[in-house]
Image (cartoon, rainbow, N blue to C red; front, side):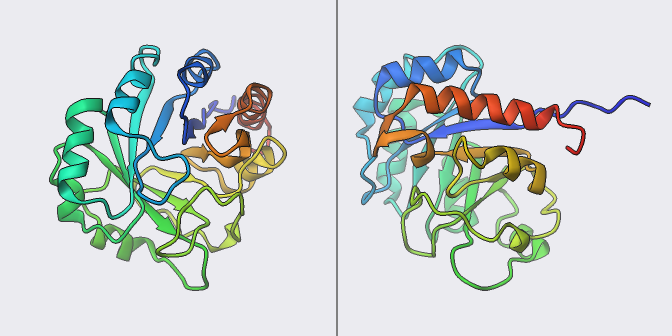
Length: 218
């Protein structure tokens, strides 16, 4: 019996240049993340992100990333950038995340010991469209370039989930084979400097994800 081919979704995050957005779209990336977290070196202003959003190809999602931003800041980004998905990395509640009328992902910090149980995640964030498991510790920024112990991933959270944290063209094949995520999210692993993406790394990352998708063990 033939195996159903599964396609791992790919999100490139922390883009700051329209040319990188265009290349990512051409490579077949599913989503582009624009960062509005206050302390991030990849932070954009709403006007900058709106100009970059215009470089997106059709059928590529624009994702706006926040970390404990004030309500009015999130609303300004939603109004100017028109993201199709929001992503929250701080202590935001489900009610806060849902209040903007845009589907959202909740990032779960996996960078310190402790178990994350799927039922408790669903109970805390029932309105989430999905989860993103990242390597940062609570209260700190992502994009650190560090992985976490993938064996600590919770059992089936009942919603689509993305793997993040320290992913790069060199380890993404093994990551996809080992964890079988719905999607993967990469930032620093495809950069030459914070916010400056490297075209060769971007291309290799996509190629390695597709190689994993076609692998017999996947």
